Image 1: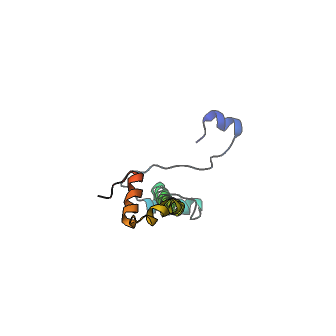
Image 2: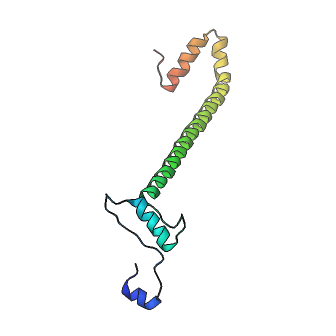
Image 3: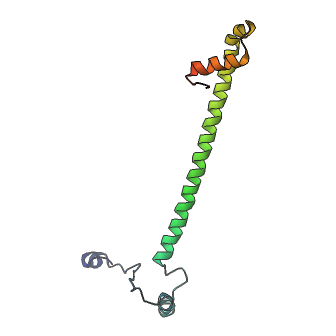
Length: 122
């Protein structure tokens, strides 16, 4: 409700009202009585618990979408990293070709590459 000063100055009727009911109140009976008394439509009365439930459902959907987008972002990043590593491996092939020609086995070359990356295969 508007303060008395605002009501006197603008002479505006209230556009909405809120009711606080006790826990044992019969909400459906009150809702039916208000609709009948004031000729209200079905969308004129709103239950705060219903509004909170709908808002919670919307937020849950939003968070589900956010989690899905996070997963998609991680998948794209992993694909980009994998592609980058493949491109580097292809360019390193030219560097490793002389070692391979000297008789170093592929497993030794792989161990050498892992050692250069700082990882230990054992």
